[in-house]
Image 1 (cartoon, rainbow, N blue to C red):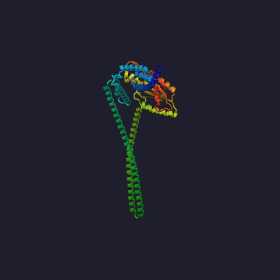
Image 2 (image 1 turned 90 degrees about the vertical axis):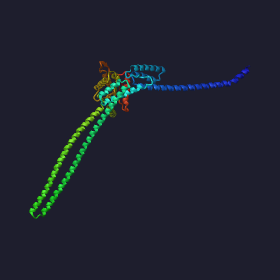
Image 3 (image 1 turned 45 degrees about the vertical axis):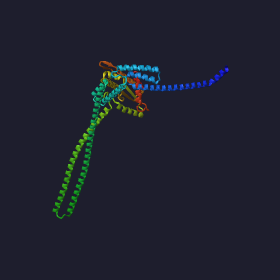
Image 4 (image 1 turned 30 degrees about the vertical axis):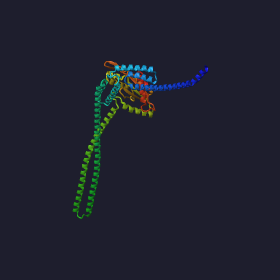
Length: 469
């Protein structure tokens, strides 16, 4: 009985080993499949995290309340937060979007509407921003202040495509008028240059006539000299050959009369040449005086235009071009003479709220008052410019970084102390500042980038603050 059982076991043993081997292979295959699936999910997760980061960056600037939510979501995404934390932040962002969308007065289209018009608000906002920048540029170059300001006000209240199209059409008309004005100025400049060229040709003609006159006078003098010498020579020969006194007297008288006539003719020609020369000289002096006067007027106009091209028309401070030129000079001074230079980058807090709530005229008054506050708190050798809508920059030369921080805080408190009332309502105005020191090894733009990064920190740290970098 036992032997048959052993034989049965021995006969079935090989199939058991084979089945065990197949199971191990299937286990390995399953492990590889799971590892491959896990790797694919990791790639999907990485792609989704990159997408979250890019969407957060793309959504910045739409609304201040949304910016805070996006900053937190982007920070959690960078540190690979758990799915639960990301879901909570996404829910908070959704609530903020709904709140902003409900309260948004800019236009009637929802902030994040349902398809298929999901991209329309972005195009709308981008078009409005671009139009606003164009209008600000037209204001800066002195294009019809009243019309430009009216268009800026209408742009802030526009709600439909038709209203925006009307604003763009009027803006295009302003651009065309400005182009025609520039063309007129070019024609005027060409006329002035043509006039100068004509005057220079007159001067060249005068000099040429003077040269011809000198050559004519020289030739006439040489001819007179030859004639007189010839008469004297002939007279001498006649005197030597004469035998009759009466005949000799007649010959001498004839010769002297001829010489006298030649001298008188020469004197007459000289007097005529003198009169002509005096007249030409008087006319040329008058032409030169006119040319000097016109040149002086042209220089004065060019100086005014050059000064105006470097000045912000609203605040009477320097503009971005003026800042770029001054900063280039400070970089050279820092390199050659090791003079410390500090940059203070300013931005008015909640300026858009002031414009939206009280109008752009109120915003302009705020900008002018803040500019005056900066000017009164700085030395004559310091520099301040308006480089953007509500952005200012200050350059402090020969000031240590510690002293620059003190000056920045004094200016910040000075702006905070300003008092504004619009429509009977007190309005608080504050500024944020990012400051840094120009270093010897700074690349172009690196100083500004550090100040801008510090300003960004000041804005997100609660505003009304000065942050050093």
